[in-house]
Image (cartoon, one colour):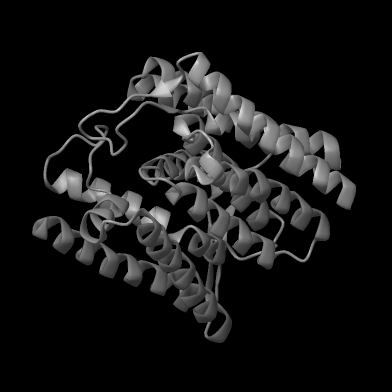
Length: 331
């Protein structure tokens, strides 16, 4: 096991290293614009590299969970959609249409869909005939929520790692723990390149990475819910800040009659970075908020009940939304 782990770390590093190298050679780079922070072209194949590393993990560790293996394998198609978007700058309809195909495959052929969203003391929220459309819409929204969180170095990578660590803690299954560890390792290696530690060439996740990670996390949450590993509301708390931010931005844009699909600098990470002028502090603050909110939700679930945790999720969103509006108005 330990030998396989060392091999996996080495191969993941090699995949990410050569992905970065060839990305610059083939001009697969994100060029700076007025709305972007970086001042030089940066390789955007981080997501493709992660997906290849994850595919290798399936071969190396021989995970025994077919559903989870298929999530990673089909996720590779999402990474290719994101890469195509990075290269060709697909329109919104085209990008969403290509995302729906792999999502529907896992929902229909692998039965990875939600039949309910939890029991809350006096009632259970059953989805009935809305199971498939609700699951598809939820996955689409969460995938693109991850895309919203990818705006500064390290932000999405650290948020994803924090979510994976939460899932690691929630499960007692050692095989799933190994799989989650295999997902975290390449992300840590990616961050070394993303932050240019040891003078490595800089690498971005790109849309291939943000969509891919959103896809993986979305279906892992569904799997955890279906297998009764954790209550759906606890799983929602694991991605709480990503969800809050996505909903807040879009509601604010609707109120201000702005285009929902045009990138801007109204994201939380942009606002914090503008105020504190530090990428590392911005990442620390955002990741800390996500973890803190999760523990608030988790403790409310364990110490009181699921219904109170659900109500807390809604109340905290309202507080978050009010603070976001206030911050936007002060900008």
